Length: 173
Image (tube, rainbow, N blue to C red; front, top):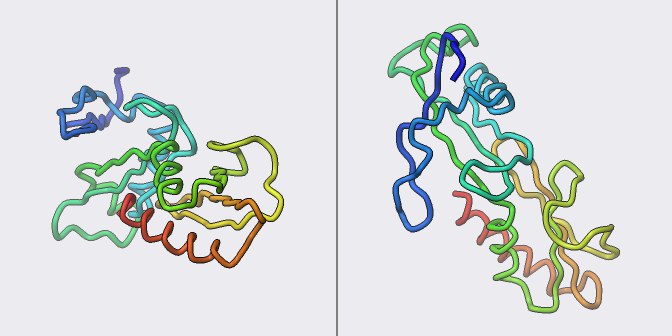
């Protein structure tokens, strides 16, 4: 990595099946986009997500970073948070995983489209006529899930969206 005053290497991680992550040692701040998101997270003290990116674990999705500060340190200002910053907790969310969670709770004849920043990240191209929509909040980003049944929006869709919400909360929580 290029010489910088601060590095944020991956020190622990797991992948599918609990296997050790091959990313150990990778400096998250070596990527300009992720470095900017890390700085914003450290400054605000909040979880912050990247836009849709190619994930280091493979696939397309977002990374979420949450700062970890020194115990007992004052955190009232961005400067205090910067001085107290020790690490980040990071998570990756694949578009395909979120979409699969939606598909498992919906009837087989329903179509799903996942939009991230008005960009279709999963599902068929174009607008869905008569689709029900469901916002998915992950850190400071909101994805929009559009769900369309064979007869448009029917009475079963609100129930399906409620079940989907519980499923996504389990996936993301």
